Length: 309
Image (cartoon, rainbow, N blue to C red):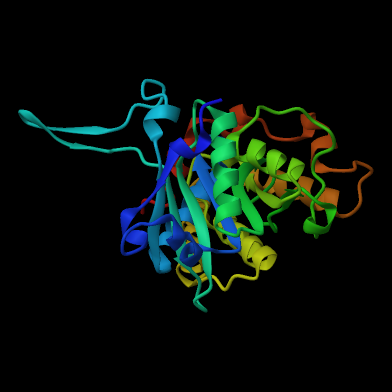
């Protein structure tokens, strides 16, 4: 393996001369990992990372060499063509931010595209930063689609490198094999190294999986705050979630089909809560659940612009 530390560099403005000794001034006990690319129903991770950077003081302290880890042809960056010339390029970046919570407590936020290549080397590089910057707890978050209604409390599946880190957990899954992700591998390797790491998968109604569902992001941010002790500003995200719910309710009123699907999910959810024999939602008879075909094109037409209006 090539030297993992060659994958990142500290920004020169993190200290007067950018010297390595200035790293001590960048230390923080919490690292939040928000690397897109894996499943993220409701754009949960995206909403959380954008909200944190928009509502809290932050600065970039390190950057990764995306040219070494990104498949440009697999995820082509956006360029703008203006009449007779190229006017802009959406340059991909993988950045480590140092963010301050409402009380002035610093934490780190790693944001950017999920690496396509060199996962092992990227994990080593990130682990090196975790050690150098004094990180005690690494946290990741994303949304997963579930057959649940948006009108009932959302669930969260928590996972971590130690049982003491996982509390108030919704056991929606037993032992399953799933496609890997960089964030999951990082959590796994941190656990092998004896470091604390925790993740939250918010259960997003499957019919809202392709939209921005702010309630899921709000719940995820609340879980991060509870797990880390950080004082995070929830005001703007809570307001967005309220508008989001109102828009969904309005669009439901305009579609009997959507209303019927949601009501069927509500009945299924309530039956489960009341104590049916099934151990979890995944053990429920799938024949009783509405299928994706039942949701249909009308559902997508009504909900695809929930957050755009």
